[in-house]
Length: 449
Image (cartoon, rainbow, N blue to C red; front, side):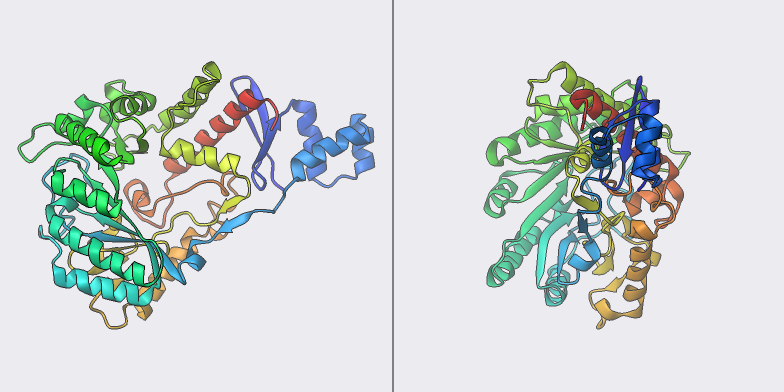
């Protein structure tokens, strides 16, 4: 049993990573907990700390209650029978030229092109031949709406397969929001497509980073289309924000962004992540402390307005809150790339994740390879992905106090550390600091947990 003591803002908390239990302590309580955890005999502890049976049992219960009784989320095992998400790159072209685009303006490192029907038919045949159930199809790019006709065709044939197999498949789409039209709105309604629109949550910053081909800003068009889509379909369900140095320089906080999106597109989840990039990028954030600050600000907001149902939440903070509130869940893998998620390029090349498109070292193969799923290359790369991603086997993760509640991203690893198989110290520290703020904030709100 491991105990992590967190001390911030005049509060000291004992946090138990294995059970995700935590409670406020003083130094005497710390010494008592350490004695119990180290295995000192009960009677010796009672005598040393001058406590009775009831007090001893109270502490013992808080430390060990529900220990090791949790559900392990193992994405590799679940992927043996089905695939959670298949990402289809309808295009590797885009009508925008965003400053931080990891996909090189949507083209990645290939010629600009769109997927054709023959490639789509082949990938559907290969993947639905290998997996009985694929839970979600995500359309990606580039800008996927530049290949609308193929997306419509894909929805029809995939829905037909799922219907014959007697299960419900879901569709998702990540779009810049500038090409939304009546045809797309009808398609969203027909197939209940879950739409994510990329918008950086502050018009001025968005217009510096998310620019059109003619270098004009995109905020006005994105917001107009997002509101139209929301009114007609209830989508988008998510706005994706890349928080970057321009936000910091403009003194636009994370909560400023979340509140702005809540005001202009209500009832829409905010997926917000730090901009990745090399140190010479003017948009990459080196100091990620504002993410821990945002957790404290969210919980302070709740403390000041306890009756409100609205919280200015965003993805990274919500994941931590959810993990702390659901103690029976254990997230075993850092990232599901290659197990829960597989991505196919416009040319039919297969990768663990869309972020590795055109990275030859991370390529599984091609849909036209006869033995794609059993090839030495795919088997070896999946084994390497699994070896790195299983936290209990990862030297960095297995001793970390947030091992049971954090997620990672192999693609972001590449940006921050230069390799998908090397964790970013800065990102790991960010998640640890966010968790500490969450634990302290929850303790303030609920006193004893």
